[in-house]
Image (cartoon, rainbow, N blue to C red):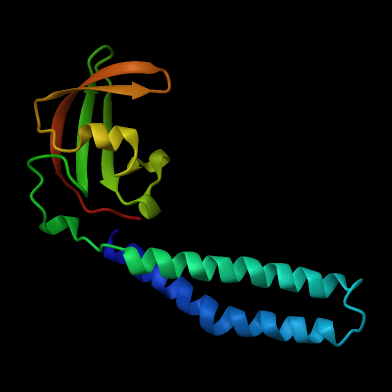
Length: 156
């Protein structure tokens, strides 16, 4: 993942652990003081929120613990790799498409940011400018020429 994503997720984890946990604990204590817990909607809602928050904390701790932080600006981009921006030309329509290979957390296909684990990225990895690649897309198989492979700053 990118350094900026690592920082953002670390900040979210810290916020959940230091601020949100205390806030939910306070809400649970206040709801508990209202009496009978069997029919106490506030208590049950707070406990459910606490469970979801604890699951997110666990998810973030696992994700950050396994994360590999990569600065793609320091990588050679002669071949498609993490952080590469690839310009493809559709062989049938001559339409141009541009995609940047990013980590799962940064992926946003609507902005041209595709996950390194996606089938498209896997097909592109290791390819060079001038090569041809055939991709299985939702609309069927399409062939593209790789017009350009390089690095462009990534804004996530």
